[in-house]
Image 1 (tube, rainbow, N blue to C red):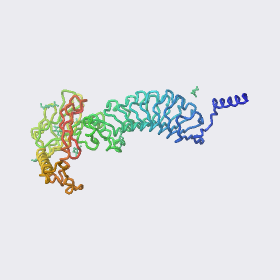
Image 2: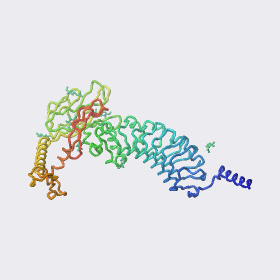
Image 3: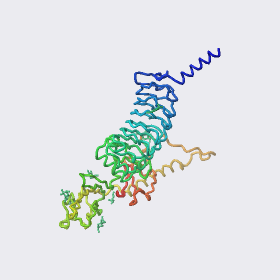
Image 4: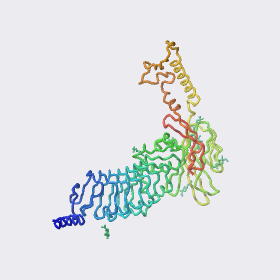
Length: 480
Ligand SMILES: *[C@@H]1O[C@H](CO)[C@@H](O)[C@H](O)[C@H]1NC(C)=O
Ligand SMILES: *[C@@H]1O[C@H](CO)[C@@H](O)[C@H](O)[C@H]1NC(C)=O
Ligand SMILES: *[C@@H]1O[C@H](CO)[C@@H](O)[C@H](O)[C@H]1NC(C)=O
Ligand SMILES: *[C@@H]1O[C@H](CO)[C@@H](O)[C@H](O)[C@H]1NC(C)=O
Ligand SMILES: *[C@@H]1O[C@H](CO)[C@@H](O)[C@H](O)[C@H]1NC(C)=O
Ligand SMILES: *[C@@H]1O[C@H](CO)[C@@H](O)[C@H](O)[C@H]1NC(C)=O
Ligand SMILES: *[C@@H]1O[C@H](CO)[C@@H](O)[C@H](O)[C@H]1NC(C)=O
């Protein structure tokens, strides 16, 4: 009896120790080369899986961890679906001996970091899908060695910094899509981003982050927009930045470019000629200085301007115009008129070295605003006075039963209140102006003293409420 039992136990033990390679776990469905164990309540990867699997689907389970060599018997595995699990970290060597892997979906898990060792050895990997995790950090070497990578999705995480410098032409020659949208990036390392291979820049998705508005950031997106990248075109409205990082002062910076009117953006026309394009917005009657900053550093430059109203302007014919041309190339419009608006082009020529550069400035001269702040203020004051009068009427009208011991709570005259026209009760403020005043009343404080502290040439910014784009800046530092 005892010997029979021990033989039985031994056989069970043996079968456990050396499972046949080609078994299909009971909760999975196995076909020729696809194994599907999705939505099976798995808490870990089944130990014995058919070694010939090319596609493994373990999505929608409760797997929380990938141990070392989780797929080491699946040397032919190319596609691995693991979305919608609870995975929060991967062990060292989790993908050991799974180097055939080309498509890895770890989306909708609980990953918090992407560590350097996670994807080691996956040199054939083409698509890495990590969206909708809890990733806050991507370690610098995390994508190292993924030399076949074509697409990487990091969207919908909490990433604040990304190691852009780790992506280079040599390390990732096939990368054409890097999705970092819907994260928490506030500052882009512009030098690193500009150094990304052209194909990566074209496929870089950065919308719906927490970017802080500044000229150099805008200038980069402006260039991409100019080149018609899909990432900009398809998500124009979701390219937002916030002023001083205040999320309430968020603007769609590809739509509402007025904020960046004074930014100088560099435009490459045809190499090696560089044109600096900038916009200047002035009110009629103002004196305007248009500087001819160029990349030429010679002391012996001669300057020519083209003005939309005056034509070509050189030192020799400038006296015939109401303009002044200084020796340093600056053109002065003494009193700007509306018909002085247009594109001004300055050409600086370095005769000695046979070099020239051009700079364009789009000047817009606006008529003085019709409703000035002071009249707006007067109307606002009128509103306040009316409101005070209404309150006095509501609370201080003599109570008919003044002998009552306990004063009744004030009765709000609901009968006169019409929800569809709430402005009616404040009739002096009703009509087309009500929204504007609401904007005025809305309190918002922004400290302008440390404006755009990243740029040393910061000037004081004056903030004004704007009817359409919420916030408008009158002065922004020039791009260094
Ligand atoms: C992994 O592959 C190496 C060689 O490619 C082999 O020697 C080793 O036994 C494999 N490990 C496992 C766990 O299959
Ligand atoms: C923008 O990102 C937040 C998280 O950062 C996300 O909740 C939201 O759905 C995203 N919006 C869009 C339109 O993708
Ligand atoms: C050029 O000279 C004029 C007059 O001297 C001055 O107002 C202007 O700021 C100068 N521009 C530059 C770029 O130095
Ligand atoms: C521009 O407008 C002014 C009046 O505001 C006028 O005297 C001048 O002739 C106009 N110039 C051109 C080029 O139309
Ligand atoms: C500027 O240089 C280009 C060639 O580099 C030349 O064709 C062009 O005529 C030059 N323009 C001026 C205004 O000198
Ligand atoms: C100059 O700016 C105005 C208003 O911002 C715009 O309508 C016009 O198209 C611009 N012109 C050029 C050449 O960029
Ligand atoms: C920026 O624009 C404002 C008008 O919006 C103008 O008064 C100011 O002079 C501009 N600044 C520069 C540096 O062009």
